[in-house]
Image (tube, rainbow, N blue to C red; front, side, top):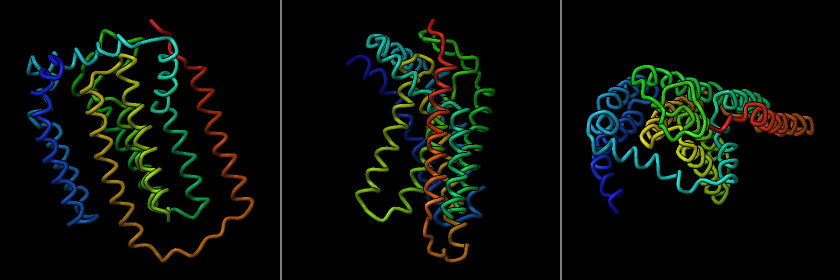
Length: 278
């Protein structure tokens, strides 16, 4: 209970970020493609200047204490099987794997005549990665002391969290948009949400991030996801009417090969770059 009470000051200040998100969505709806740059700039200003978010990790002692407590909480539940599980999960947000998955996804989109998604996909992933890198340099927050393995970059914001929203979020959007059945849309949404949540939690469980780092990463990823979806919708609205596409046997074979390649790359990368537990 004391832990939850200590979180109240931090939670209270997140409403400032909520205002900026609502403003961003409104601008995107009203200004369409031209408004993307404007709304993105406004959101970034809100992200950097929002009183509550900065207080969360650098100003208020109560917020810092909450972050420290939350970072130490997963230590109690650590076990060898869970640690191994979350090590595999966290690799899904590693930038090298996101790059491979994005390349494969771009080829698949081209193969299945969904070219309007390719540029927005790269925009989402690249924009998120660049902003995250800038944030790490700007804030230079050290990693938590409870980390299970050494990370060589700064802590805030979480690159894995921003990558998860930017890539898996956009992938879910594309699949949901082109899916005809409502049940499939719901399943896709919750599957993507589960993957994104697991990647974020893996960073907390492994002790390499604070809660505010993960939230910060989610916000950066969400910003670029919203911008990229807006660009995608604009490209689709301006493009020619899609000609019905009937995939051939060759299309299916190449798609299966690419997906299998992604899976093998993920397994090989995780095995080769398995972190050394401290």
